[in-house]
Length: 192
Image (tube, rainbow, N blue to C red; front, side, top):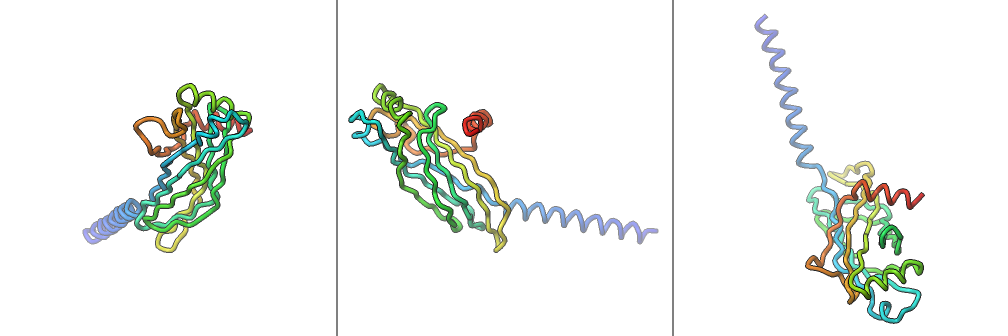
């Protein structure tokens, strides 16, 4: 009878230790989401001053993989700018692979929707304009040679653009964060 209790106690300890080991490994190897930061946004002064129907937004987007054990495979990434509830412009960044601990900088421009451009130009001329930025993509992690399932990523941020056409305020770099549920539902209504 005493031997059976010891055996059951040993089995219980074995599975408890195995569970604890699994928890520690999961915590140690769980990859972090990539960090997206708007480093610079510029609306050319010539676009603001000339009073034309067309404008553009020049941007620098930094994508950082801070994982030391996982590389990331990105599907096509959609970068959208909003003014209020109107879509200002959109750019697609083609799919790519990012190694462990690497940072990628994307410099490009977005042509502004002519229907929204006049309102943005007037707002910038008066003081500042508040633009919203959204990033939509799907990613897969590769840890120890094994690819994970796809993970959706929806990030957002707010930019204040001053009368000079550049980011206004103390914060010159805008880190994009997970989208709020309120903004997500508004965006989905606009897409439908």
